[in-house]
Length: 496
Image 1 (cartoon, rainbow, N blue to C red):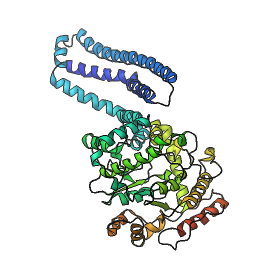
Image 2: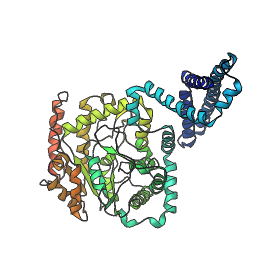
Image 3: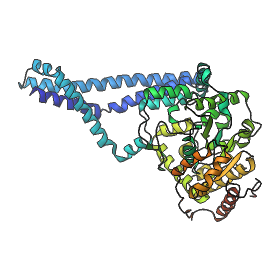
Image 4: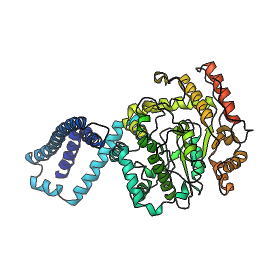
């Protein structure tokens, strides 16, 4: 009987914790602590505001401490009451119950049973919506805290990067900054597939998920990841587009560097483009050193490669900084791309509403393309109306403005690639791509063909403006006429 009473007491203990929401209270304490740390480390917040916010957090933490202590006392009290009640009724002696409770068999068994019961109740409570959110944002409380800390201060990331430069100076080779490859275009144009395919080649090194969240110190981050993380199986990324990633997968983290050195470009609701005159010597030195670090993370690599969708706003500057660079701009049928842009915006708007960390994550790495994090680049003379971002015409206008800007600013190092043609005819176009980017051992690019899939027919967009659609079609033809595999024409502006 004493064992049954102890088991019943354990159930009561867990029941009280659940009824009084102990998990949510503990989570609130962790979030308050994270917020206070982020405030203290944020150099953009005035000292007076910091003091006020930290004071409020301290009061909230004190209240949370007393509340969680009270919940624990109530849970223990309920368990003790049940065990003591059984002894009072004469079913067993208190000494007998204590002896059983302190024995190793009961301690181990009750611990395993409590964990199983808690997890089972969690699964029943969460349901499919919460499980889907967890799959889309696979980060626990500790991971979120580390990411929030890393994202809270770009200056700290720069300082850590400079320390890393001194620490690893003997491993860095300036020669690896020669002939870099920058992949850029609006999202959903095939940039991720292009990066995946080229980064697999032994010549190229790219930033990977191993470098998160301290992306400006990739050597330290990679060493940390090898010790404390495993590559693991690939899982579909939050975009829901069938692309699977793990810790070794290449990804677009270069924008964090631009955010650290150009904070004024990211202060408003819109991001202004860069020009060839926008140069900062300290930024250029840091960028070149950072690129050599990325190459140093992959044995045998000799060239840097990155994917950064925002780089289409700085084509002139990239060519001024790296006259020997190759800038690959994939071009996709506007109907398919615009439909995908709208779908992703809606998807991430829903995700950001359900999981605020997903928005903080995207903003922290400089991905302002979708959802609540949307911050369009000012390509055209007229700012996009953010209130209409849920409509197809918003993305169609944005597509037109973006690629008109690309045609107007692309230089001789910019390589247009018709993504649909590449997927349909990889055997014909991959050798031309290899030659365009001056790839050593050009035959090695043939392995990229396995990633490419023939495109689906372009969808109809019945809700799109007919005039905008015609302009997009004309612009698409002009872009494709400049692509590898086509008769090249001089790059010029498209008349609006």
